[in-house]
Length: 265
Ligand SMILES: Nc1ncnc2c1ncn2[C@@H]1O[C@H](COP(=O)(O)OP(=O)(O)OP(=O)(O)O)[C@@H](O)[C@H]1O
Ligand SMILES: [Mg+2]
Image (tube, rainbow, N blue to C red; front, side, top):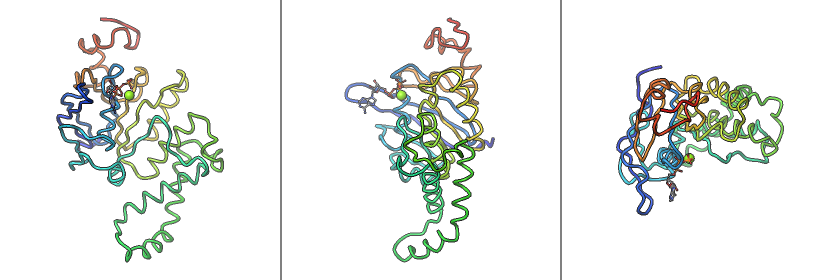
């Protein structure tokens, strides 16, 4: 882990009508860190993700990605800057095969790093694509293996079962070249075994990347996260290692009976 800050939120505020949902959120995540964002239902966690991901503007505050102010940038531009996001509903091309989905993503990622602009550059882009097609194939095959979806490489993505589709969704972000990943409840709807396997797999898949995950399952938080932040009533109530946060009296009050072992304060 380096000590460079990958993502920083400063004073993020947002209201919906008369309801103040976020009220000055400050958060700092180092490059290479796996960070969990937890908090009660309706605390504003997904709203924080929508603001980072560029689908919602904050009323106040700044989002910094790798030291650059990206507040209000479109999701498309954020993807070019290395931000990947998985959604509650998967966003893969259902009729393309699993491998084709990954190839498309790898192609986007490779072309996005070229920076060629305008019609004059287009012809050379094709030449470049031709030259780099091996790299694109290799990247897609590598991610396919990491996803443990080789057996389904030629199946239409729409025919995968739910868990595999969610994995592919994340794989698309990785194949695209994301360095910073936002995952909203990656283990939602899974039983204990599936959730544990998903966490193992997430750890491997995100090695060397920066991860911010919203997670309700405290076992998953402990297994996955280097650090945890707790969002309560529109602000970060506490940040620290999972153990520090679990021992924090104010957090225990916000989470009565929900901590591992079910202790209450
Ligand atoms: N686009 C929107 N328009 C109006 N209200 C919204 C909008 N998005 C979120 N809200 C409200 O903001 C509050 C926070 O919602 P958010 O989805 O961010 O919470 P959350 O912490 O992700 O909750 P959960 O754990 O249930 O997923 C809720 O009261 C929600 O109804
Ligand atoms: Mg949510």
